[in-house]
Length: 116
Image 1 (cartoon, rainbow, N blue to C red):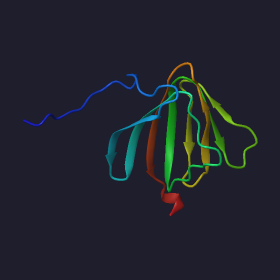
Image 2 (cartoon, rainbow, N blue to C red; image 1 turned 60 degrees about the vertical axis):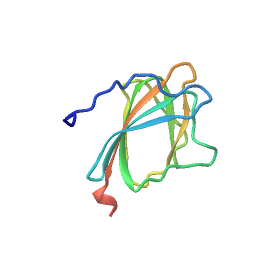
Image 3 (cartoon, rainbow, N blue to C red; image 1 turned 120 degrees about the horizontal axis):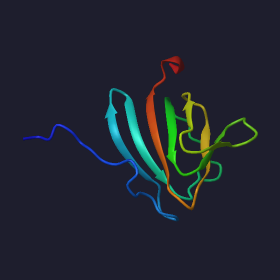
């Protein structure tokens, strides 16, 4: 008999300092993806900008981080509970994440009808 559910824990260990970020796709259906991302001392590569055709809603569940948005003078600091809605094609990058504790993100990607 096929199991009708999957379970897990958003706070189980993930990335380590100096290692790769851990990205787990929790749900992917109908153009919507939900990911758990675990960062520890990570940042986007110099000069790299995310530019997604989908909108993204992201919440920081633990740790600390800062996002940069193209055209903004200062990074956007984030603490647990902070969330941000990023419209499709809004260029952004991760300025930094804490290297003392895991930064656990929950990211929801979905089609942005306004950008079509």
